[in-house]
Image (cartoon, rainbow, N blue to C red; front, side, top):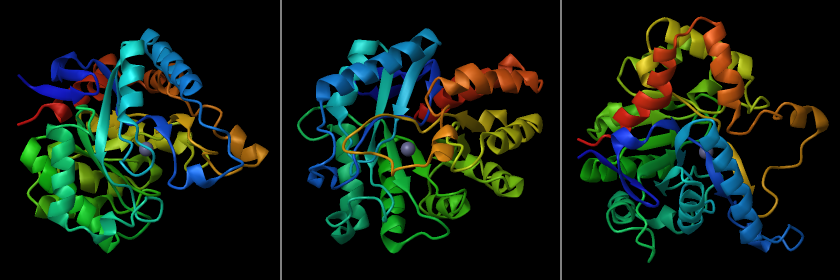
Length: 319
Ligand SMILES: [Zn+2]
């Protein structure tokens, strides 16, 4: 059976249903607990917020919520399991490390590729800490226009852990850069690129960048819908409609990279205009606005189903 680790147990890949491939329940940047002026983290309130959000998504037809929060920016796998159990939505949690400039890297900068890979494999096969809750996806990340030596090591560790476990990889790219170089590293390590999502690829409007990667068999994450101040939705949508129009719907997955709850203050302070630009940044946006826009552009239901249901299923099906 092709089964997937969710935070509430193993689920057959064909039972995942409609899937959002990149969202977050809870994020806490390293050091948040040192801010004495930040709001105190109230777990009960946060749980209520997150459960309400998933119940709303369930009513819109969501079956599975993938939360690829890396280990070093506040990942709380028990919180994820509590939210999954209370909402009835599958939640898939990750093992992995974030990009160097925003991660909590002091310890892992001093570890080898094999040591890092071993951590990922343990979290996939035995579980996170003492919880017994297993990671179902591997996360890695790079910064803008550059892959640091540390990030390179984390990418190779992700590749090796993926090969050892059959668990797929999802990445963070910054402003639509370095996706091709990420694929080069995975290919060098012998990863089947059909089990890789190059995340945040919608942050680029360069269709050659997109097709270069798609031609190599990976999936691309159009997974920041609603984050208009980073890259406007209409540009994300224009690229998506174009790529689906020329037949790439079997390699695209959709999401928002939304965050339900923060530990500490979360995003930096924003002016009114920037805030206006993220008014749609919540995980119902695709269901309410993006899918209707795709239909308006003439994209049929079977192509939408490919992106929302079939591609996630195939991605998680292990060899
Ligand atoms: Zn994310």
